[in-house]
Image (cartoon, rainbow, N blue to C red; front, side, top):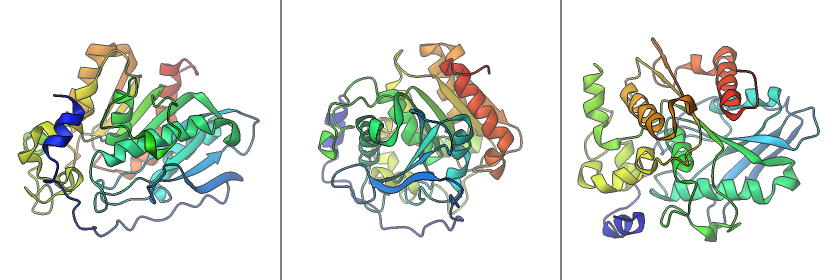
Length: 316
């Protein structure tokens, strides 16, 4: 069934959940970055659709772009907290970083966030000359909920997806594809989260994935169990085609929030379609969900090595 038809099937049955308590992550200190624009609106009619644009302190550009989407279960998070530190490592290699906020599930439900992500890509390409960006190389990078968002952009960016795209948000006609995608502990198949966690030895606790009242239900605006076809539209696996860009995928084996099987299965399905040489999957033995070790210089350097190798930009 076409995307638009599935969305229409649930018209009137979905609604945003109540706003949730935000995470108290430390804010990002970007005083060392001399060239930046903060809180740039990128989507018409979406008050939270703001972007921070950072350029390397040195170099003339235009700079290839890393577009970063924060985590937070779709109901929390912000572009200017410590989660944005890892992609900022790209500044040292001559990348610009565009960190985005997107509307949270307490205000609007899926697919609004995907529509905004596509609007962000159009904005980047439409305004590339103004911000000294290279529109021919735009990489998506996200963690957790943000990883789902950029993975959705990567798998649906090759053609217009009615229902997942809203040209009224601005800059209609500009491309919305990603040239590569990097995802950390990405939720993919919402319908099997509890099952996979139990298989991995992590029975969901009382405050996690409570049936009918959890982050995934809030994102869809309806319990996942009542709308498996809708949940499939929020799964990047659904849209895999040979046109998908290369992927770097990383996950911790001790993740008790998003089961590692989600990344393993996604990587396998991608590799089958686009070629295993275009997918780099790394599993860390003792890392938990959102483990701070993902943010170390060593891991971030490896991520950038992998991306550059896949793009033919580096020696990795």
